[in-house]
Length: 396
Image 1 (cartoon, rainbow, N blue to C red):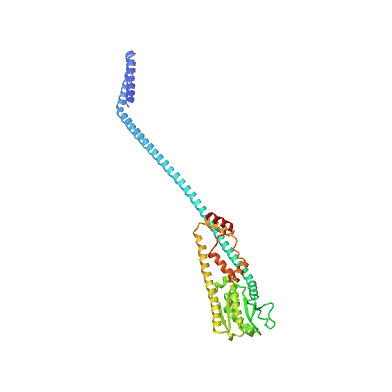
Image 2: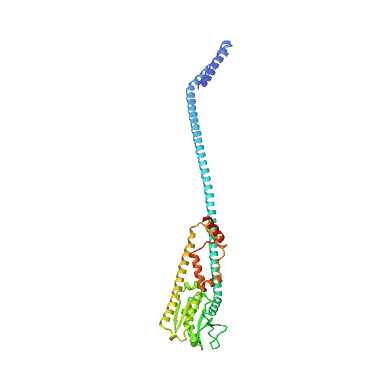
């Protein structure tokens, strides 16, 4: 502001100086008058300028105020811009963090989906494996049952022949391919034993598991009707035996039925020898009336003891089988990895095979049976005599 006023003053002084120069040099009066008029005009102009000076100062002050306000406004705007820029950067940072977090969540979600799909796939594979294992076990069990049933009939016939040929038994026997001449061939029993003259005991080796459960209710009445209509009804002893595998005998609830004068028994292969021995004992008397009361009581006691023992043995086998299933099921507490290793190892273990010769030897020779039991209860160390003598010498 001072510079502006200084400039205006300098202009006025310069104007005065010019007028004074013209006056000092003096020219003609006309020139002087003209110059004086010009000087007066300049003075008047300067007066006007001086009069306008306060207004000009006011305007300049107003302009300065406006400039200052605008500068302040610019500063405020710049400050706001910086704040907005800072806020924008913060928002951008938050957006970036949100986007990164969203990416991580998407990645985690995708990973969980993949794990879930993998777990689902593993579960489906495990279900398929378990289903396949169950199917294989069922097929193996069915195959084993079929094998047992296929071998059962031949085994029953072979055992009956072997027992009948023993010197202490000595029964005449027939199968369905070589029936007695006077016997009605339409009956075709599996095995006949002549326990009394012209009296035949029938043994039937059942070969189908599906028929056993309903045999007493459906087949027995038809069998009795067929026997009564045959020509050999008087030759058939009124006790008929059905021979079934021991495992099926344990599952069968009904082991005896009486139908129109005929008794039907369901027995195991192991029962053949004691039953035929009992009948041999009865046939040692020429007539049944010759049996004294003590002999009758002894026979009844023997047969009742045989039946009681068989029933007890069957009950023990059932309870042991149930406990075995429970023990096998206890492995489910192990991890899947251990279960897989156990199952893999188990599949490579061969089934236990019992020697038929040893079984026959133990079932037919009671002394060998007792000797085996004695060895189990009183085991002896396998020590050579020479080694035993050396020990005795060193001790004594």
